[in-house]
Amino acid sequence: MLIVTAKQLFKSYPALAAISSQRIKGPRLAYTLGKIWKQAQVEMESLQKTEREVFERFGGESITLENGTEAVSVNVEEMSIETRAEFDAAIKELHETAIEVWGSAITLDQLEAAAVALSADDFAALDWLMADEPIAEQAKGKGA
Image 1: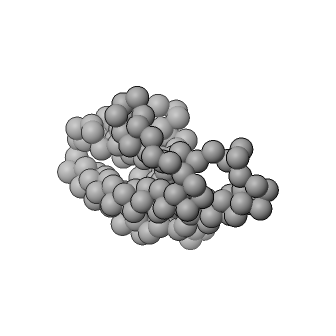
Image 2: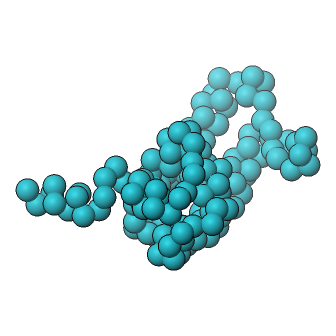
Image 3: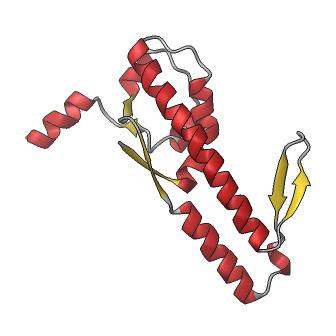
């Protein structure tokens, strides 16, 4: 199992979508990424619903973005100091929510062998999913 915070999932979701939209060479990695992506979609839907509820609780209003997507916006400048502190605490609690995701860390070797193309920003966002060295080398290092 992998553990990711809600904040990490929010931040890494576009990068995870970028990986998931690529054709992956090798069925094992494709299967693993597919299962992680499927679960991430479900978790994001739940997190976005919870975030929306928090925003609405603090006076958030529905807006339509340029791309036609519906969102909730809250004007924190209009909040009292106490209300702003409560809002910040609610968002912090949401962002710190730990989520268990099926799977194990993915190595750079696996991504390279599968010809997966990612930007440096994508790798930074996906740090919760990445293993710094091959799994076999990690196991050797722990036993030494």
